[in-house]
Amino acid sequence: MNLAFWKNEGDDTAGQVDFSRLPRHIAIILDGNGRWAQRRGLPRTAGHKVGAETFRTIATYCRDIGIDYLTVYAFSTENWKRPKDEVGTIMTLLRRYLLEAIDTMERDNVRLRFMGDLTPLSGELRALVDRCNAISDRLSGCQCCICINYGGRAELVHAAQCFAGDCAAGAVKPKDLTEESFEQYLYSGGIPSPELLIRPGGELRLSNFLLWQCAYAELYFTDVLWPDFTKAELHRAIAAYQSRDRRFGAV
Image (cartoon, rainbow, N blue to C red; front, side, top):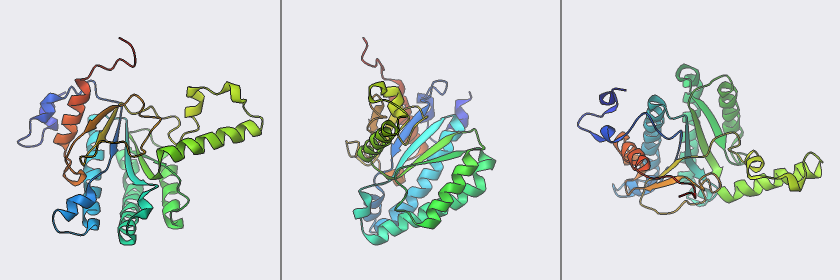
């Protein structure tokens, strides 16, 4: 691969990355939108708008370099506590993104998958999600998983409830439960676990994101706020991942 093709002008970070052994699945916590805006004397909603454009840029780049799965933490179960205008802006941006995706998914061969409890969303948003799902079923390309009204603990409770329901119906027996079979009850059932989890924004925690799936993910933290996250920052995260010795408990 010609690495120069991937470089930004004046940026040599692509040279740090071995594009022949990229992680198959990258997860990102989209953190720092509000703080980015406040530092510039802008309303927090302005940060979410810029962050949405950053997401579009990074998601497209992940597709272009051959990342099979990208999972992003867009809106948590706790984010409903934020001011109404901020929540409203996020939902408006989500609507705009879904409408654009419906028009471009087949052209770009990008699949979308939504993880979380979508029942609190408006009927219009749920209908748009359904349309995206129907289109995704016909495609085979890069899959972008968007976590909305998502919480890792809530996901585990939901999975346990589904398994208990199957037990009550006689479809399975409690003693037959394994880690592999339990994974199929998660929102992410059928998707390989992330090898790399990136958190911009300077916080050093998972914030209830993909608690099961990231048991063996390599964690990469950066002080860069999400709206300022660039392809160069992604290169640095991937290079850090590639520099680590992943032993999975072995020697």
